[in-house]
Length: 194
Image (cartoon, rainbow, N blue to C red):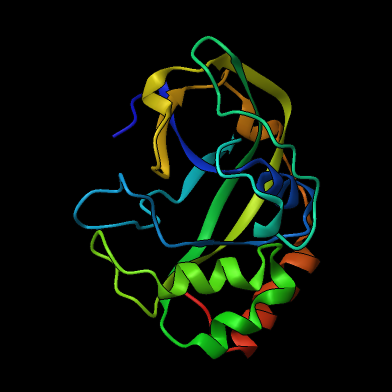
C-alpha cells in the first residue's frame, strides 16, 4: 500500500508510454510479468503514474512509434515521470476476436498481443488478457527521482517517491472528454466495458 510519501507507478515500454502520452493509445493490454506473484497480474491500482522502461524494447514488438534501443535503467540514473493515468475500468478478455478488434486502439504488434494472450503461468490462464481503458493526463511539472534496484525486474507495479502536492489539479487530459467518450462507446460496441 502506498503511503503519503510514495505513489504507485505502472511500468510500461517507453514507446507505449509515448503512445499513451500522445493520446494515440487509450487502452493498456497486460498479461503480467514473471515477478507478479502467485495470483498473477491485475490492474490493482486505479490511479498510477506511467513509469517508462527501456528493457524489452524491441522494434518488432510494436507496429509504430520510435523504439530507442537502450539498456535498462541503472541505479542512480534519473527517471522522469511526465504522465498519470486512471483506469476507468479493467476486464479480462478470453475471446480472441474481441482482443483482435482492439488493434486500432494500440501500437503493439499482432504477434506480441497473441503471445501475451496465449501465454500461461503465474496464475494466468492461456487464452486471456487484461485490458483497461485509461484516462491519461500530462503533468504540468514533471518530476524526477533516482532509479533504484527495487524498481527493476519483470513486474508491473512499483512504488515511487510521491510528486509535489497539487500535481493533480494542474494535470491536463491528453484527449478531450468528447474523444474519450467516443473511445468508450467504440469499446462498448465491441462488447467490452467495465
